Image (cartoon, rainbow, N blue to C red; front, side):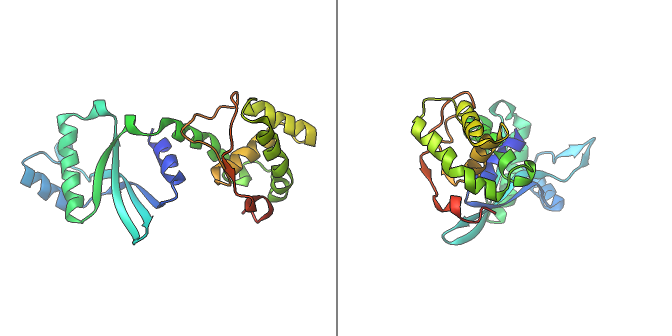
Length: 215
């Protein structure tokens, strides 16, 4: 699940840096544990360095800021887990950094699955038969196929039809669709699960993306 969350965070424009499993200063966390009267994180009685799931750098109107988010299933919030989270919370509070828990069941599952489905097309190197020139040539035709369909036909069929009519290797148009979606040149409702067996609606298109440098 953590890999999916990282993919989701990378999708968000406001997130400019992600640090996973960020280590905390063990001397300070031990002091906080003593102040709280609870046991520090340990293995066989030996204190170990605590880590937090994600330290995120956000781009805001007032500049870059760091926030901390830790992710946990609701059914894993045991008394001991909450004790360790309180050490984390106090640690980052002293640093003036916003910290909170995100429950897994509150995450946008459809969006995460969609981004995971698209991410293979983020880099052209993953499909050597596709380059920027081919994308520029095919994109207007593929977009027209999708637009004229009006959300009736499965996207898998539309893309195969485009491949057939233009003379492309099967799967090429689907890769190009994913490429435009993952780079946000073409926009669809990411809260609706995208399936190749279902139709898709493209809400808007960045027209400059077709004729400009796609690198």
